[in-house]
Image (cartoon, rainbow, N blue to C red; front, side, top):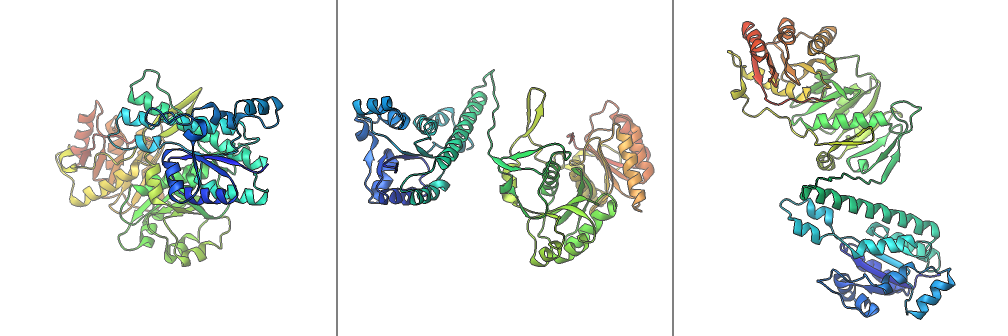
Length: 514
């Protein structure tokens, strides 16, 4: 049966007038409230106020407008039940066939700085979710819309189905409603539990399906991606993404986001295996990154913070790479890389990713979840001159190199050691059970790559618990060290540095990455 009556009550009025006009042209009677009714009426479209429809006024500064049996009875009555239809007739409750509601902007309100509890509470929608749930429950007969992007789809459905919509379409929209109300309620409970310092704090999350992933850690493990990953990253070509691809892409984006100068990073299993910088030539930045480890990049991930050009694309195309990420790709670079059909080419939306980086890190735990604030900033680089703990202060060149190495070591899995110059990594040791082993691996990797560590700097993501890790660095040729400090043996470590005329800076902050 064709849609005969619609109720429209929206906070966000994007596309509202055109949609209302289309509904009117299909002969649909329009009911509305407050500002929504005014916007429709101002456009010259006939509309009936809900208060006139129900015979009950809007009350309590608009807190009560649609909470009325005539509204919810019009939505919930079953069209296939003689008993329902008779009760509707006896009580003068006509059917409402279409509901268009988007909710008060609670999430946007509480995201603002300085919002008060009272302001947040006033943005908790009551009538809107109630109507959405009533309509969605009865979606066998009622079409319910909570997303302006669906307005045109509704009109196209009506055009194709003699003024009605199909059961499959109504079910799709109903599921969208229950997702939205779940998300909305979760945002409210999360905010209030924190704002009121409730002892019963809760964390809830409700995200739409983004895509089915190729597989998880291994091909026998299914994996699914939820949320808005596609807002931050656009896949331009290549095989479907897997669970590990997503982890690598996130790690690559995190790394490159911490560098301002033109930078290229190469990753393997979320660890950087080489990072290079050059103010003028992205290709030279690549040369420095690649020189750190010429074997690990095989099947790895490459990311840069400038649009990829032809020169860089040509050299990268010579090796097997799994994923390449850049803010953009020049046409010549795309033409070269397109020849590698399986290569995953990812365009990064830096603005969207900057917003996403503010979200917490969520990890599963037995029986639940852990939620952690993201490690946003590179801490300890301010006023480094005042953080020198050795007799000899670092030279200007050593200071530049330490700033670079400290930005890199933040992204290496702990225990993490990085040897570097001011423009590139020289040796990286990651994920070992002892810090001295990480240092030895970094030295070995540098030697294997034919790189000298004479005059290099060393960065450690956490304190040196013993002097042996630093002594290994001194023996390798490092002349300056940046580390958090905080060990009960700091004096012993400092003495070892002084004995070798090494300069050392304590950042006062660690950057573990588990």
